[in-house]
Amino acid sequence: MRRTAICTAVSSLALSLTACGALGVSGDSTDASPTKGNDVTIGVLMPETTNTRYEDFDYPIIQKKVSELTGKLGQTVYANGEADAKKQTAQMQKMIDDKVDVILLDAVDSHAIAPMVKKAKAAGIPVIAYDRLAEGPIDAYVSFDNELVGEVQGRTLIDAMGSEVDTSDKIVMLNGSPSDPNAGQFKAGALSELNGKVTIAKSYDVDGWKPAIAKKNMAAAISAIGKDNIAAVYSANDAMAGAAIEAMEDAGMTDLPPITGQDAELAAVQRIVSGEQYMSVYKSYPLEAEAAAEMAVAKIQGKDILFDSLTQDRVDSPTDKEIPAQLVSVAALTQANIKSTVVADGIYNVKQICTAKYASACTQIKLK
Image 1 (cartoon, one colour):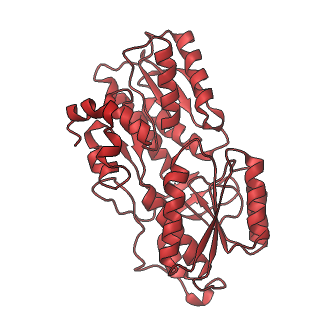
Image 2 (spheres, rainbow, N blue to C red):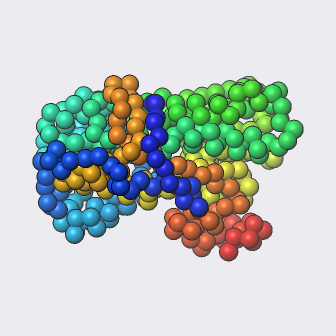
Image 3 (cartoon, rainbow, N blue to C red):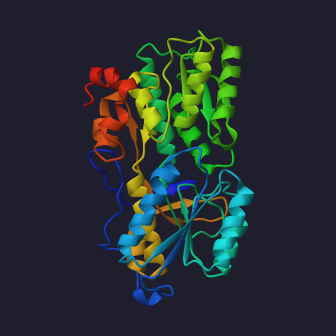
């Protein structure tokens, strides 16, 4: 993916991009798409359930925002592909057959779904790629700045290793699924920070982001490198980080090396509190999900100037160029900023994080 930044506005907490204002945006309402009122139907396709964020945060936020934007007249239709590209294809076909007004698509397989994107286009149904950049003639894309995610992970991992980090220090990389275009961007961003500073002793692309596979990969890495020779672990997300920690503990590693994550899952935040996991990447799901809902409603209602103001970035996919987009920035989540990120943004409260198991650790880091 090539990205071209048009304009950004950074908040003081989560370093999150917001959509730029409509001032100065070109657009002519006479060029608007066929419009609908508030009685819109938005199809929402999510990719899997292993990562809890999609059903715990993304979809509920989209559903609520659509209702707010349409005076409670708009509705959403939801389906989850459960990491099965064929299943998601069937789900998207049903939405096309049911003549939804617009589809928000988070693709299981960005390449395999392209024919369905073309079918939707032929049926006059706009498709907005959500979180993962699908191939085919999509109308817009909303996601986080994925290369920045990897850069933040890599940079924070190097910082965690301390001032004496050396090119001989061995790192294990657990990267995301080959079918997810975001995974390649995370990996590229991380390598831009890691290459030349440490040795990538083992690197795995984990099919389907499955923790069980990640655990097997980590066990194989420990066997090949030696449990005392692993200086750090790059894990592309939190679910795999948890699996890697299990593999290290099973191997008798009591002094765990720094390990990264992504998504700020509750279990990961608790592992950060206890010191098992060094960091996660916090991504403001409300910003991404609300932007997607706003883009979907504006698109189908023919509000072209508003739609343009929400999509002032540009990205390229393997099939299409200069796709209108909104890219949202991210922040490294460590013990130092739990309260000013996930707690301040209402993702979790202190009570949810500091259960009995983690009460003592919370006290030590003054999380209360």
